[in-house]
Length: 125
Image (cartoon, rainbow, N blue to C red):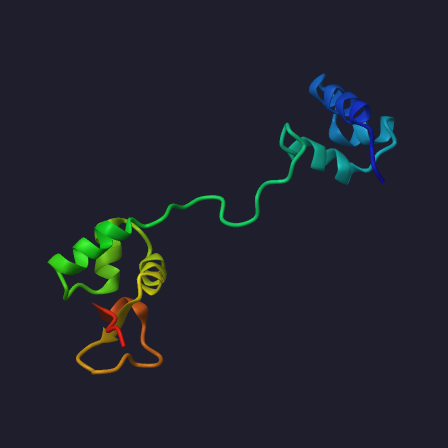
C-alpha cells in the first residue's frame, strides 16, 4: 500500500515530538514496520545503491611496483604492506592478469591458499 508523503511527515513529526513508534503506528493506523522503514529511509526517499557500502579499490600501480621491487612476497605480506585484505589482493591480481604460483611448483596448485602463493605477470600467448 502506498502512503502519502504528508502522512509520512506527520508520523515522523509525531515521533520527533516525543511519542513512541508503537504509539505513532496506532494513532496514524499504519504498521510498525512502515514506521521503522520511514525512520531509516534516506531523506531523498531513495534506496541505496546495491553493492558494498565501504571499502576502496586497491591501487594497481602501487601493487605492480611492490611486486616488481619484491617479487618473492606472499600475498598476505602484500596485503599487510598495503593495509588491505589478502582476498582483496587476490581479486586485484586476478583482474591484473598476474598469476600466482604456490611454493616452487611450476603450475598453480588447484586448492592452494591465495595467501601462500608467489605472483608473476601472466605470459602472453
